[in-house]
Length: 332
View 1 (cartoon, one colour):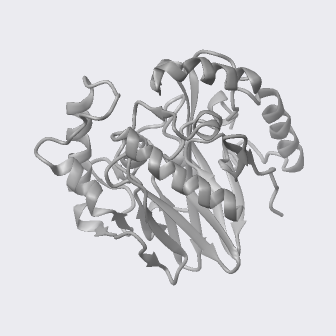
View 2: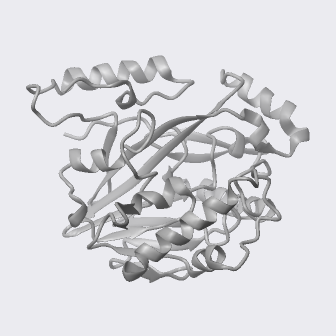
């Protein structure tokens, strides 16, 4: 099968380097005959967390045309431009990566969010194909954890009006359910455009209703699968936004979810926020807490919206932090 452009997932600032990596991967793993499995890395990136199999699967390669107009406070835009310029980042649209984390341990197959869902489109909706490429069928999935109910995280849990993963428990914090099911969800503190909100609310409620039979609510600090997954309440981006810590032996991975939407801006100054945050002030408090802990402990982290495959560390730098991506490794 020809490899279309959407499967060459290239970050805007590292396009040439990523292309080189892709060519090297292809050389190491020559393609099979035309009717063989359709694709491999870099669309699907395998790695390990201790003894646990893990994959980062890209669901989208989008550009946010509003650029810095999405970022707050507005008076910090000159400093934001300086940070981006110092790192060779172009002005204009900001990249939006969508990295879905998948784990497999024994008979458990666990998803952390599920992407946009729906039919495959040129720039999004690739997650189902990614799962298929690693031999995981929808019926194989045993658990799905939802960080929050924005469409790029929630919608992939539903397909054709039914749970996309019928055998999977659907885990979510009750504060997230309560927010979207309130008579009038409170977006008064958010800087996001208000026009799309009615449909956004209606869609979240519809998907939660479809997933109700599979839903199991969580609380902060819950540990599941014998301590493999720990739930961390991380409010601000949404009321019930959650992060997740995966622990296997002496190894761990902290899933940051939507604490960061950009690999420079929310690290250089954790006070900078994005319009999508429901409560920007709370998101800053939460981000500072997680950044300080991860930097102090040198915790390996995973970012849903950080450059694919989204694995790296948070390092202290000047008055803020730096996202340091982990070097790619090819599993044998």
